[in-house]
Image (tube, rainbow, N blue to C red; front, side, top):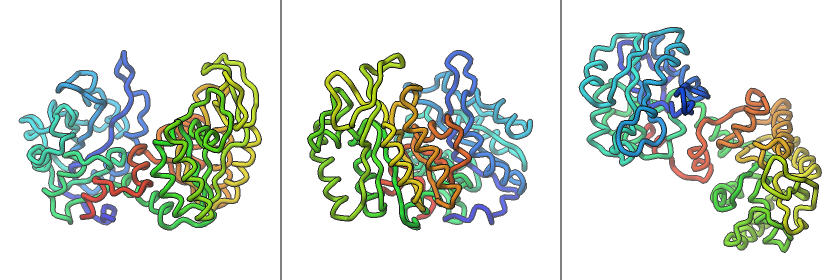
Length: 399
């Protein structure tokens, strides 16, 4: 782990890779959720307090062919300034061009510069060394505080590290917190350790489940992926979501779990609907006995109660993925029940980590984000971390 907190950044220009890939209103281009910007503030403020200056670089959206106004980071300047207490935020209309170089060179202690969208250059995603070198020339030290992009070997997230000696490469406070939380679960978990895995597809979660079979005592499986497991065991699932090409995979996971004495918990009942819509007719059914023309869109009451009981006795909890289509009110009770159980277990001493876009959205929606131990900002990065993969953005700082 880097030594960010103990380093004094006085009179140093800190080049920080942040994740300001925030959602903007399509019409006004106003920020609709500033969570990621707020997450970077402690790192920025520590450097400014030390008497250093800050150069921020980020991507925004997926620009196809060079600069596009709707993806310009200029739309973030005023809000960032407000979050920093009204401090002036200088903006460069490029990230490696003449204005960026000149403004960075003139930056004084306590000042902040935001560079234009890195992805206006294809070289960013290609991990181009020359592009990374030009970025590196702007700062004295490099700090990676963008956990959300740590699984990408892009120029600004990984390649740039080679242009800074090890003592001038750091994780920011957000990255430190993300890595510490993940390490707590992966390598220091107290048992019972329960992993709650939801979402639509088994194929998206195979690697994470297989890695967790080596560590967890219990794995709860909900969401659309549960019906692939049901069908694999001979159940009737109506028109529920199912990956027929993963039926054998589901059986292999169940067999491995049994051999390793890991308890797999599948939902015994489901809230089923006659269509995927807010005005659908609903009823409760056994998850392995769903009639034709009906689909499972949430876990049922019995499943929610049993899952909650498992969570209640857990000392470590990882939650990745919802239990149903929680965006529709009729199908959110299962996900909410899990959120309540995770929060309650956390209050009695369990360590809980929520990671992945949908589960994070769920804890925020239900107001439990401050009642769990840690909410990760990095969906894809967190997933790959728990799959056991080495993340380029982390390796670049540590190597």
